[in-house]
Image 1 (cartoon, rainbow, N blue to C red):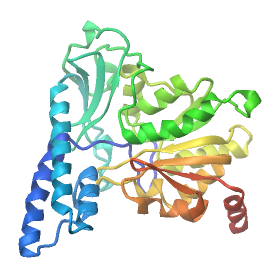
Image 2 (cartoon, helix red, strand yellow; image 1 turned 90 degrees about the horizontal axis):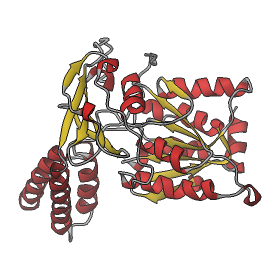
Image 3 (tube, rainbow, N blue to C red; image 1 turned 120 degrees about the vertical axis):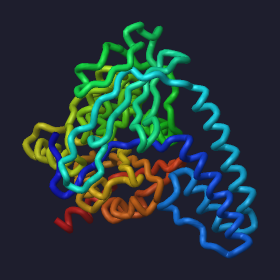
Length: 355
């Protein structure tokens, strides 16, 4: 697959509930030690995402640390029990791509496990020993009997048949995706007389394709394009998880946006109303190439006037370059770590002056 010489833009993956629960126990113990022995707490970069956010908030409030940490632990314990109750059985395991010795830990260098839910007609993808389930999608109808296999293959084409049509009525899996949809949906519902038009949306990082497919199914008449580095997840989503979109660019963040800008300059690419950024690496962080000043400028140029960049950011500081390009006034938190930056007349003038 095509990749940048300066680094990858990797697709997102989710940490396992087990590791998160274990980390909660560890931090709860460390918190008590810190209280009695004045030990420093772990930094946020060493703690899984949601845990880190809760601990950092609690640490900044000495009067309520223990109550918040305990509440966070109880919440995760409940989620862990629910997740364990949703058992999954493997359909097939797709071997990793041989290491190219570039020193970068990419998703392509790990096995992928495609599974179905034994409690219903669902599909999931996991990265064993590194991260948990990326997400889960619900498919229409009953589980096909052909799904009940457990093969280890070198190529996705060798996986057993297990077709899926995503259930468009099934709710989105993650709160930040729900916030994205709450922002996008009103524009999808506008009639031409109300200034509406078919939405043009770019998705940078698709995970298992749940959100892009949901938008394609529910934002009628919309065009949904994707940029994603790993061809395995792109093909898995299309063949086994009901993934649906229009144009696809299987390449890194900066390669994808530059290619779209080239097509735009040639008159072969319409600008976008929305760009959705949802991509994480194993750190877990949004890769640098997907949030640096060059990507921010490319995203700004690819948007319509008034178009918006939506981003899933565990750390608000990862959006600093978006502030630089779009302006602080254009930044709004949608909640659940979902943020938006919109292209304004002011930000457009600033970018023109810098060119």
